[in-house]
Image 1 (cartoon, rainbow, N blue to C red):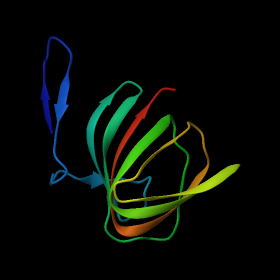
Image 2 (cartoon, rainbow, N blue to C red; image 1 turned 135 degrees about the vertical axis):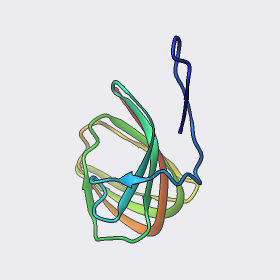
Image 3 (cartoon, rainbow, N blue to C red; image 1 turned 60 degrees about the vertical axis):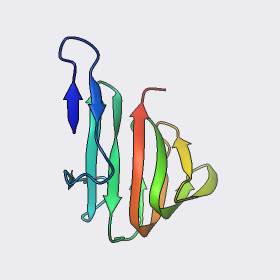
Image 4 (cartoon, rainbow, N blue to C red; image 1 turned 180 degrees about the vertical axis):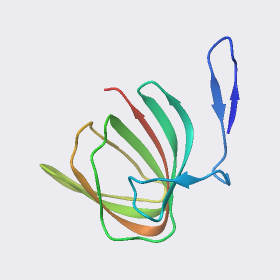
Length: 116
């Protein structure tokens, strides 16, 4: 990841082919993430899952919008219809939504979280 601008707005840059991955405990034992930026209540990055380990329960701490770069996901949303998002598709989930993700691997997504 590249960060520039120490005296003004910070600019972040990276690439989907990055080799800078760290464990993503929210995704399970096989999940990895690459954080692009983390400033206050705004976050953005990549999630990678090469092998599925069953379903994943996820409650976004802020509004989460994401774009599936590879694979697909079926998301059950408590109190709302389920959605299916495949490569090239994107969606946005509200803060606090109780979701269950059923991921088809390999899976990659670009996500952004921020205050509603």
